[in-house]
Length: 323
Image 1 (cartoon, rainbow, N blue to C red):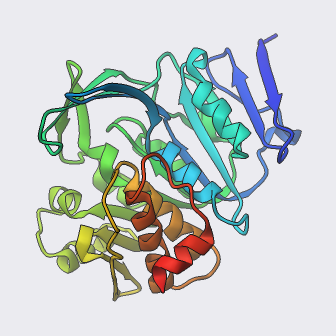
Image 2 (image 1 turned 180 degrees about the vertical axis):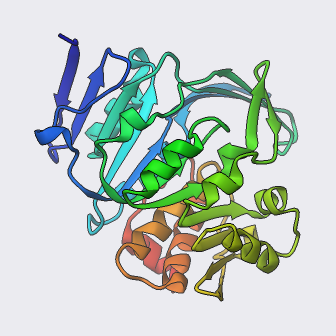
């Protein structure tokens, strides 16, 4: 008999499963998690931020910022999070549950541990990965059902091409490319090209990249040419974020220019791209067109820039930014 712990929150009947076995299989009727509109899959990290004046520890990761952002919006789109970390360090997941986020935790030998060291110049960052979590497996995900699977990769081996192909048979795959371009060697993080990109992108419906990532995977500097190439590799909907220049969406052979909304001040850019993805998919799943979804996502991103931590405002605040 496998030993397990099961917890259920009172707020919204969310569920949390933790198993001391090689693969976590949720104890849900028929062992199938109820179909969601969006399921984000990714590691929640332990981040160590070192500056000349302080050292701070906090949770992070694509899945962390994505989940909190979408959880602040009206529940017109159903959402769940699948994550993996060391079960002894599950406090961030427990906080998510208390916030009303539907989380399934798979046990991992380690929690991803990023160390970011900043000098007097905040743009000068040295990054190390002090611990890596186990990659996600098909066995962990075979009972998960969603219309869209958003993969929050942090490192290049988080999701194998086989896992992506498996999920693509169940729903649309959405990928934020950042983690696929990071490789860890002797704790140091190196920028790399994406060796399996053609195998992965042929099974990807939504792909979000920033300008630097776009150039890395395509070798092109022109966003429109890069978007066309990424589309030719199999991606149906390409989203390229261009910082203060806004963003570009390419779908159905049509380009859509999305404006940026200038923030009053830039306080914390961490998780901004993840917040954009959350807003974009949230609106697209409700039938919004690419421009409507892009503007909504850009407004969420602006709000996120103006404060520390994950997005924590309301849909009314987003609307005010868009006016």
